[in-house]
Length: 190
Image 1 (cartoon, one colour):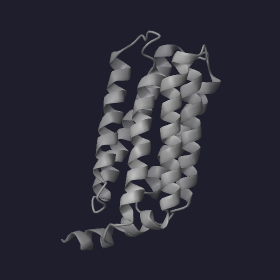
Image 2 (tube, one colour):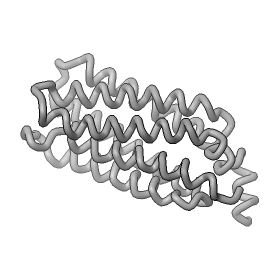
Image 3 (tube, helix red, strand yellow):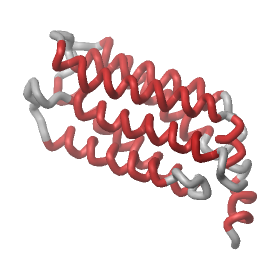
């Protein structure tokens, strides 16, 4: 089966869907990059708990991802983006609201969120491989999986290495992947 036949059998063309909603992809990418930068910088500059920052960042990023997914309901990435956005928003809210959770339980939850994010980004990368910047989602997914593993390996944390700091790195790469795919979609063949 040729690549064009594969895309027709999978549903709406991902290149066309991304191209027609470039603004939303760029907005999501910028929000995720800002969230990542905040997650990296803020815990080391303040006394605010890293869990609260990460909870807020995941919640806001998840909400933007849900909004972005609702703008492209007929394309093949809709369900995974919607579910990931909901999962991140709910996980972020739980992390932020319930400060009585043990640090280990919160860290495991964050690791699960990033593992699911990593796998879905890798799958998404192969679905949009016709767009020149598709590999950024592959890189971003790999980093999310590394972050998930690092979160589980490095328990308990010191002040210089918090879950928010390492998760912020993954959010930066995820945000860049969205911006890169949006920018590259204008020159990609449908």
